Amino acid sequence: MKNNNFFSKLLSTFLEILLLLGFLWFEFAGIYHSFAHLGVKDGVIAIMVPPYSWYRSIDFIFWLKKGEKGRLSKSERKEIQHFINSLNLKNKATKLMNENIKKEKILTGSLDKEIFNDITNLLKGSLKESQNVRDEILLKLHPDLPKHYREEFCEGIRLYLQGTDKLDYKMQLQGQILVEEWWNWYENNIYKKYKTKQWF
Image 1 (cartoon, rainbow, N blue to C red):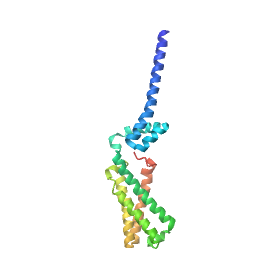
Image 2: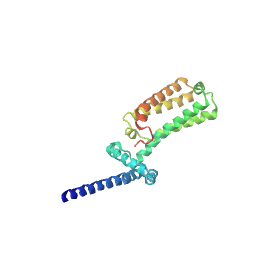
Image 3: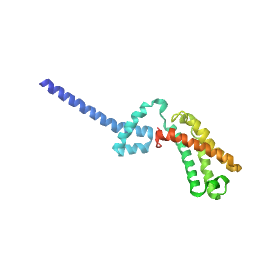
Image 4: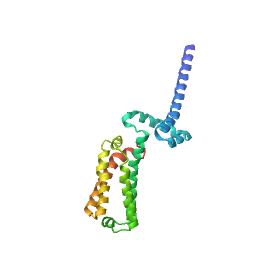
């Protein structure tokens, strides 16, 4: 009888220790992951909001499973931000087009000069941002991302801008087609996988 009580207490103590260790993992591993790999802002949120640190501790497990090749350093995440910026600038240009002018005016260039300049600057800014991210970093998101990004998205914008300068309707249209091909691929292969800006 005494032996049964002893083992019961031992088992109970062992389970309590496991629960304590589990709690400490969920609390502190999440905070560590946030500060070390996601930035100070994310770390502060993890400290202030315990459920968020628990979420980050689970994210940390998947982060570890990715292995060195699948992880991104802080500098690499900054490069990915340039990729995101390039997409956002293109989206802003498209939104501005849709809000102010009809398709035929875009292609012929018969639109308000100030709006036209804003659109052009946004597209040029998109291309500039694309030059600040290396293909080897994009490969960590998807093995085919560099090819589609450079040959469809970037080339499409370049052709559209060149066609605009030369008043070449066919070149503009070719650029638009390439960008559309990019968005179709991006939607099916990148956005559905990540769905947010949490790329890492």
